[in-house]
Every structure is written in structure tokens, then in C-alpha cells.
Length: 160
Image 1 (cartoon, one colour):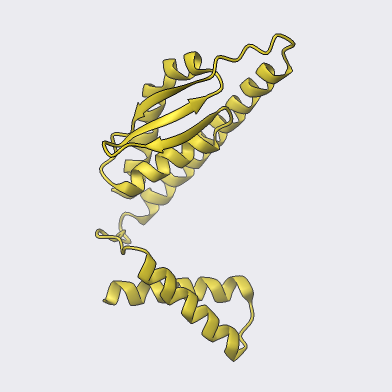
Image 2 (cartoon, rainbow, N blue to C red):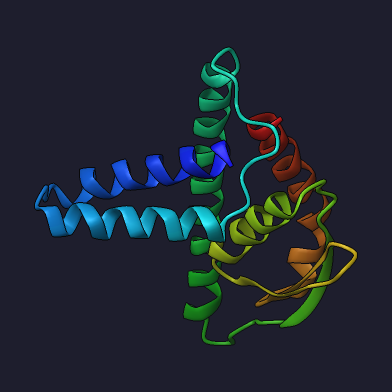
């Protein structure tokens, strides 16, 4: 119960910081939104300790930079495909095993794939396999396992 109240309080404070409106009605709306989010979300079973926070933030920065580079690199690759008069696409769906321990890990992994140009996770199987539509399935399949291994290692270093 305390975890829910803590989450609601954090959401309420974030809401107030974003809106910068401290009218009584807005305070009430923020509290309701915070409570709704807290009830909807499952509290983290293993909260991040203050001792691990600096390393988790460093790993988050590393992951963000890696993901940004991946997005730019694949954006250039997709632009080349689209601008080529022959339009050399080889679309298809590939299966990428997530290999993550939690649903959050699978969801973040799928998000990272989806924001990358040329790839879109269309379904996540019950076994954690992400079925991904690719503009160039042959090229994507060649590097998918290695990319997922790196993604998994970085996400685990942030959350564990």
C-alpha cells in the first residue's frame, strides 16, 4: 500500500512541476491523476537503491546514446533504400527472442526496436519472442540477435 502512495505522490509532484499551476482545482486533478496512475501501474518489486542510482543513470545515458546512434544509422539506411530508384526492399517478419526476465524488459526492448527506422514489432508472443516487420528482413535478421544481446545487457544493467 505504501508503494502505491509513494508512486501517487511522485506522479502528483511531476504533474505539478509540469503544469506549474497550484490552484486548488488543479491540485485535486493532479492528485486524482497520480492515484489513477498508481492504481494502474504495478509498483516495482525491487526499488532502485540510492547506492545504485549513479551507475543506473550512467548506464541509462549509455543506452540512450547507443539507441540514438542506432536510430540515426538505420534512418540513413532507410533513406538510402527509399531514394534508390530500384527500391531494393526485401520486407519480411523476423522472430527476435527477447530473452528478458520481466515484461518491462520485453516492452522496453520492443520499444527500442520499434523506434528504429525500418523495423516495427508487430507482436510479442507468450514466450517473449518479438515478431518484427522489417523493411529489409535479410539485413535485419543478420544483426538482430547481436543487437538484442547488446540491448538486453544494457537494459539489465539499468534495472538490476
